Length: 246
Image (cartoon, rainbow, N blue to C red):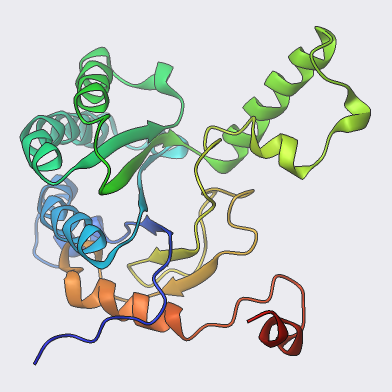
């Protein structure tokens, strides 16, 4: 029996991929073992998102705070990331998926940055879906950098402080030009957003699951989409007002 297609597909889905370390610990392995096995989940969800018509998929891959973790884990993660980008680029090209990445690029190792940019350039023509990796990213960093750029433009006379509004701030964030997430999925059982897209998630629907990320698969992703399709998004209005607009 074919799986039911959700009535309403989100344009942009963001995912906080949590639980790799706990998954490995339960198997008496080190954390890198968990991160290595998480790649299968990434591959599965990217494929499923494209199949279901999601246009943008953002994966919270490495936070700005993650640099504080033990050097062995950080170095291992960077190595896995570089290998994954190299290995998955042909699949992205084949499926018409373009890659983008957001975050503090200066913090990334030179080889990782080079491989990322090469993949971004090679997949730029993809039209099936945009895959965005949030690397060395944090919401507070994003907002801080946006205000620095805006302040510089005010000083240079490119814009006026009196004209500042939410739409203008959108254009100074690293996600400028990308629709805000409609749905945020967090695996691993925690129910917080962990400094991720603090501005962009203002009206995003949140979905939390206890499933650890290495075990997250297509049926779980579709279940989240089904849940989203039943949500009523009001943006501060009443349910009656929303129904009148339909």
